[in-house]
Image (tube, rainbow, N blue to C red):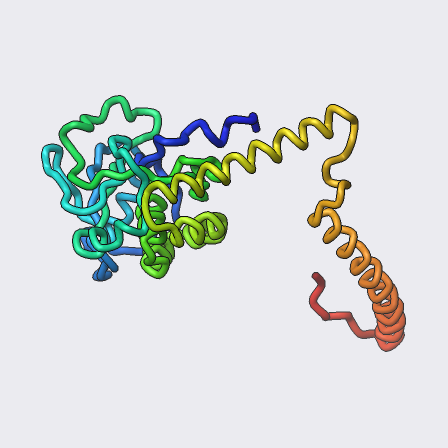
Amino acid sequence: MGKNSHRSGAGKASGRCGGGRYAEAKLQKGTKASIKPPAKMAMWDFDHCDPKRCSGKKLARIGLIRSMRVGQKFQGIVISPNGKSPVCPNDHQILEEHGAAVVECSWARTNEIPWNKIGGRYERLLPYLIATNPVNYGKPWRLNCVEAIAAAFAITGHRDWAAEILEHFSWGPNFLVVNKDLLDKYSKCTDASSVIAVQDAYLDQIEKDYEERAAMKARGEDAWLEGNMNRMHIVDSESEEDEDEDEDEDEDKDTSENEDKLEDDGETDQRPHQ
């Protein structure tokens, strides 16, 4: 990963949503699940994505989100590249009263979207976060629809709402796990400026770490051996594995003796094998 790859979306992350693969809910054809959404949610759907892989369409099928027409405006928080500032905790009242909206489209076709004909008064960007949907797993900024809305919920103090909508996707809960530290920091901010400050400090640290690893590699040093806590944990784990191996040897010895006895008795060993 290049030095500046994490910054490539800085200042322009939005709710543009690529399709995310999911475990399809077993709904009868022509029916809709009666699930009450935690807050108002809406989307402008441009049918760019495979319906079977689209997180926004799944939310619509189970009754959690409503579709908006081109030309309609939304009164709540709109995750959009037209935003001038990121979602911040100060947006909580707007979100609680009017909800959040996103644009369901492909990341590769955003130039086709009539951005001036959709949106609303409170258009917002999203700060730096990592996608965990199967299409863009591990990529910064590339959140799909449900991740974008969940991020807005979490940042404005409603982590429970975020968890509620993510639980409808097999990979969904992992979004809150992977981004826990950042979401914790963003949710403790006050305004958009403080959210940007947290984001920039995090990105600066990423670049610093990258430069240090690159310098160590150039000197022929192993970055993971220089007091890295992960490395220390691995060493401890290896020690534990040695103890486990000793125990396994004792178990194998006992097992061998038992098998010999079973063979002598004419019986078959029916114990489950790992």
